[in-house]
Image (cartoon, rainbow, N blue to C red):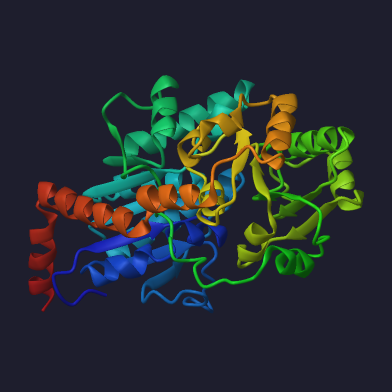
Length: 395
C-alpha cells in the first residue's frame, strides 16, 4: 500500500504467458515513482510473488482464457472488489479476457484513467455469430476505456476500418509495441549455429526454417507445414523447427498435428524459457500468422540477424523491416516461394536487421513514453493531487 503521494497503477493480465507482455515495464514504473499492483489468474493465492522480481504487489484473479459466462461473471465481481480495495488511479488491462473484464470493472468503479492496451483483434479472423459476439464484446471494452493504446498502426487502422473505434481516439506508442524489446537480450550469447542445432536435436549441417509461437490455426501453422512440404518437393534439403505448444483453443487438425509429431524433418521442441538457441539455429523465421497486434517473435529474430518471411497480416507488416518477404494472408504457394528465395540468399544483411530493431523498438523508449503519458493523463484528471490528498488524509 502507498504511504506517500505515489500514483497507483493496477495491471490486469489473463494468465502466465501474459506476464511476458510487460516484463521489465513494471519495475521501471516503480522506479519512476508509481506504485504498481498486478492481478492475474497465474498468481496463485498461496504463492503471490512467485516468478516476479520487479518489486510489485501481486494479486490473484480468476480469469479464464476461453469464454465461460458464469466464471466470467465471478471474475468481474472479484475484479471490482480488488479495485475497491487497491483504489488505483490507473487501471491498465490487456489480453482479451482481462481487457474486457478489467475495463468494465474499472468503469463501474469510476477509476479516473482506464487504459486498454489492444494487442490483437480476434474479430479479424472470426466468422458468423462468433464474429458478431466478439465485435460486440470488443466494442464494450473500448467504450469503457478512457485511453486506448494499440500495439501497431496497422492494428489501429484495422480497428477503425471494422468500426470498433472512431478515428482519432486510439494511439500507438512510438513505432509500436506495448512493451518494446530488450535490445541487449541476446548480446552475451556466443553459441554457434551448429551448437544450437545440436542442442535442439537438429542436424547441424542442414538449413533450418524456424517458427516460434502457439501451434494453432490462427498462427498459420498448418499453412507453414504445407509450404514446408512444397519446398521439400523442389529438392531442397531443410528442417522445420517448431517452438511452442498445442492449444485447445483454435486447435490444429488431427492430421496436421500427427504430421508434426511424425515427420522426420520437423523438430517440435515445445516452449523454451529462453528462445536464444532457437534463433541461433535458424536460417530464417517463417511467420504466417493470420492476425497480430505487433508480434515480438519477428522482431526478436531480426535482432538476432535472422531474416523473416510470412504473411502480410495486421501487425506483422509493422514488425518486419523488408515487406518484400511477406505475401498475402493464405497464399501458401507464395509463402513457399519466399522461403526458397530466402534460403538461396536473397535477404537483408544481419547488421541491417539488428540496427532497424534497435532504432524502432528499444523498450526504454516505449517505457519512457508510457510513463510520460501516465503523468499527463493523471494531470488532466487532477488525480495526482488527489492521490497526495488521499495519503495525507490517511496519515
